[in-house]
Length: 130
Length: 299
Ligand SMILES: [Cu+2]
Image (cartoon, rainbow over all chains, first blue to last red):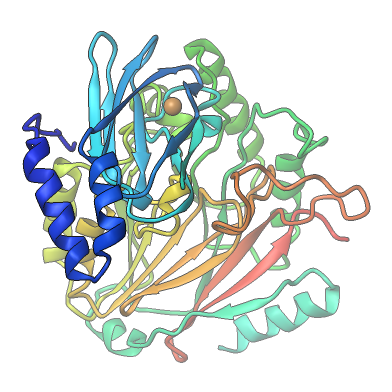
């Protein structure tokens, strides 16, 4: 099970990395805008319960790092977003987190991958990256 | 060879046969010589995903489809050497008593199959909520091996763990078993979920399936038959062929073909469309498995 580390990259360092990468591909002007919006990691709380996530449509911006913080109101659940290679167990009484930076625009399905009862199949959502 | 061919042509004449798919594998003849059990032609039947207990629009005959499939298998003009059910015998219920009731009803219905041996394995709907406890009360072990006429069959359980892992213990057991097999042995693996990442977005994968495939890779003649995705799918991971079977309750959409993994609607103009079982022929001479798909009911 992926245990996510809690070491935060410092905002300064992240700004530098993103700026440097963007300059490297010749997008200096737009890089400044991205760097400014990216300096703050977005934190979104997601509550799982039989058999849904709230919210189940998660709006993100490409290039902006996000931390999704999960809790469950009832049974153990999973969260898996294969397109971004992130997953976590969501256990009662405990918050769990995945962190990533969406690198592509579009709609991407996520689902519960811990069999949780009759209704488990319907436990899906979508990450919308603009 | 004669027998299998004759039977298949007969089926076509009778209007029962579906498409024939020939798995591209070779090596049967060499493996046959190295086993105590002399290889001869035979065939078995794969049935899958009957979801006994399911009710809903995608199958208005949810209470009768399994019985129709049992009757269709019993009407094959030759009796299969065995039948294998690749999981999701019953539909999920959160109630442990109801689960047992469904398992017992399922067992009673399939006891009508006129065949010497039926092999079972659970699907996540049977076993995911109690780690296979109720399933084992009715059907015994969730992973095991058996040999039949020169072919080594391995039943793997990738559903009793709610996270869809085979797990270290079972993988060690598999490694030990494979050590005993010649590199050119004929090996057939039965699982419920695909061992490879078919479409992880819909949970059509096994979390540690790659580790099982790694263990199987050194063996030259491996074929996997599975269920779970309620449709035919044929896929190669290097030299290993993977064939999923149709369901006996409702068909599901092709991987990623629509936003949600919702069952395909029942078509009253073509009832039971997309449902069926399959016959798998192992022939000594041609070194290939041929697969014939049969509908639950004619029409
Ligand atoms: Cu779930």
